[in-house]
Image (cartoon, rainbow, N blue to C red; front, side):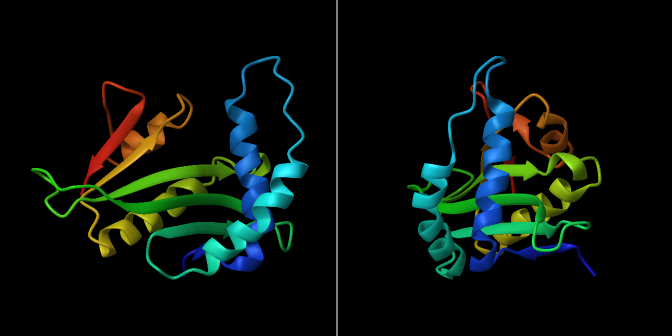
Amino acid sequence: MSLVRRAVPEDAGEVLRLRQVMIDSLGAPGDAPPDASAWHAESLPTVRGRLADTDGTFAAFVVDHPDRPGALAALVAGTVEYRIGRAGNPHGRVGHVFSVATDPDTRRRGYARACMEALLDWFRERGAAQVDLNASAEAEPLYAALGFVRKPDPSMRLQL
């Protein structure tokens, strides 16, 4: 049985918490993190709504925290977007990965990889011919192991 599951509306608060973990990890050294409570409160209804929406354009996959009931250990979120087709992607469906985060006390257990694999399967089921993401230097080895390659800009792409 897989540890990964699709996030549900009740996970919205934890999804935002893990998104903040990711945002904080990208901050410049010495930068004081802004107070997240205001934007979290404003964003919560939207995130709940998107997690409830089954239109096939947004999904988040999570792993429950093994030691803290009600908490999440890992999160991966993504969207399927339409762009006018081209060679290699004539239908124009593109996956975009964002908000890949693992709780600091559960890192190095394969949770982010498992969530990424579930999201990539979800993209395939929706006919996405490519997947884009922006990678931090710390996360790049994971994405490269999944087949993503560096593009000239900071994005990476996996041809499906």
